[in-house]
Amino acid sequence: GVVLGTPIREGHANYLLMYDMLTGIRVAVSRCNAKPNRLLDEADFKAAHKLAFDVTGNELLPKATYDFKFKDYAPWVFRQIREQFQVEAPEYLLSLTGKYILSELGSPGKSGSFFYYSQDYRFIIKTISKAEHKFFRRILRGYYEANPDTLISRIFGLHRVKLPGGQKIRFVVMGNLFPANKDIHETYDLKGSTVGRRVKPEDIKPHSTLKDLNFLEANRHLSIGSRKKEVFLDQLERDVLFLQISNVMDYSLLVGVHNLLIGNRENIRDNNLVAFEPSPETLLRRQPSTTRMSSGTRGGGRSRSTSRQRRAQGEGVEIEPSRAVLPDDMPPEKSNFYFYKEMGGMIATQESGEEGDEVYYLGIIDIFTEYNMTKKAEHFFKSLMGGSRTISAVNSVSYGKRFAPDSLFIDSHPKSLSRCKTLQCSL
Ligand code: ATP
Ligand code: CA
Ligand code: CA
Image (tube, rainbow, N blue to C red; front, top):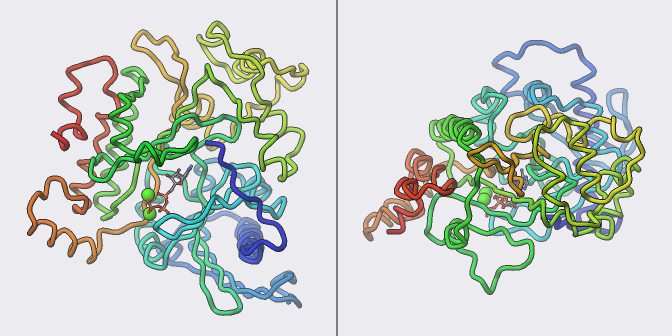
């Protein structure tokens, strides 16, 4: 949803941290990209480059407003990952550091991670713990080898800031699974489990992320038609296999739903994003809908420019002709990849091939937790207490099995209910 958080400006408690993160990224990424590209070797996965910024600067580093240390992990690996997903360094740096403003998303949840959006909403910085950081470095090779159509949220950088007081903050830069220019009307975080997977009705607020039981109880289903469904399930299986063999736990399938009949009503320009002083180009993309989109304005093939025009008409937005031939408003890491190329996601599709009124945004998030000793101990105690079928701590192989992709697509086929693993668990 368009919960845009608080822009971090001077005086904000995390302004220094933001300054250090962005300065480190800017210098480290430009530095790596200034060199001619080359093949990766084994050492690139373990590499960690230190940068010590200070107010005077030196022959290697520009002077910074504040003193801090920065570590850039596996820069060559992330350079290649960005290239694989067609994120060009200049664009990447412009999104993140063109304006020194990030937007902080609420207060951290139980994991303690902070989330920051880039000013154009395209990238998210997530702070991670030392253990998560260590673990991610260990599985980086496998992550790098995942194929380009992976559903795992893209991670474009891994870094660490060390503040003058010695505090170390580790973080990743990842792609936002949700588009900047569409309101998300429903959000689910699904784990294929029913244990503790309900947000209580009294706790549900407008942009709440709901869980498995809310999904099932609302009789929510995602209709993408058998063709897209097959490709999706096939990819999900591959991704889950990687997560299983890497011993990853606790990840979720993040599901965002944009309802085309509702359109964009949140009027982002009236929200915090206006503080980001978006370029005229960005503002154009974020035109709010003023009229309902009639279903007659959609359907059929969607070439890039016509979908844009159609959307513009449907949303009652005036677009001068030259705008209509501009590249689509989706960044290349979306428009050129199967699961993200239709308005940044997948358009609902019926068996007949006819398009529905929703767009789905799907991806696997939170892949930094290892099935470690704590989990094993928890599993051991819970098994002693009985009911290992319903416990939440299982090993990564069971976790992957339970992840239950089929349960998402209960569609119109009653028989697929019997294949619904989430339901089976709860029976
Ligand atoms: P916990 O460990 O308590 O589950 P966490 O701090 O590890 O939480 P995540 O599960 O990674 O946090 O993410 C929390 C929420 O942030 C998600 O439910 C989702 O709404 C949002 N989010 C995370 N990653 C992305 C992403 N790549 N794109 C869009 N939204 C995201
Ligand atoms: Ca999570
Ligand atoms: Ca987590």
